[in-house]
Length: 228
Ligand code: MD6
Ligand code: FE
Image (cartoon, rainbow, N blue to C red; front, side, top):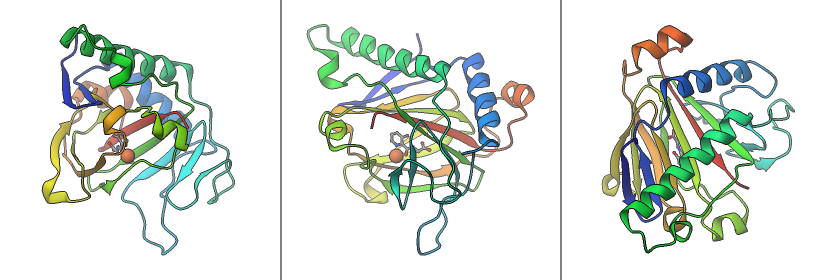
């Protein structure tokens, strides 16, 4: 079993949860979808400021200005569906988190702490080695989804990232955790509204075999699954 950390209530880190084969599948799928209709682009705000990453969405479209809309404003593209293999991986990660919570305390109801979720959308970010993402909350999903604390499930593949999180939008007060290739971070329940962001991408930290098998360029892929 991969190592599990309960970072705070509703926030669980599954270290090295995704197998090498899973990671290869994730990269190849993102490579394929990323150059198709609805594929990677660099999002920007209406004032022209660009995010320091490439993004694409599956299932439903989200962008930092328009939020959730059926077709994306930049090019009118409809997002591709979430592949079945991704659905299975998300299910497995939530199950592993519940098993871990019950292992820690068999008297709790694991679903109270971390509700179940079936994703209908996924936001995929690709960061090059200068990529980053400022502290934010994920609060554009439906009020019901947020009120229930339905978790966001996040897969990291490629270079490691320094990930910040905290109850305030304050970088100096934030906790830090390094997310490595294969890690899964889940936050829901009492942590659904936590502030979080990516401060740095650590150069040359992708496992060599992963690069050899996928030709992934230097950088980090992050997939966040949610239920609108
Ligand atoms: C990232 N992740 O790790 C950005 N959001 O690149 C997120 O913004 C995120 O990891 C919600 C839940 C988990 C996350
Ligand atoms: Fe987020």
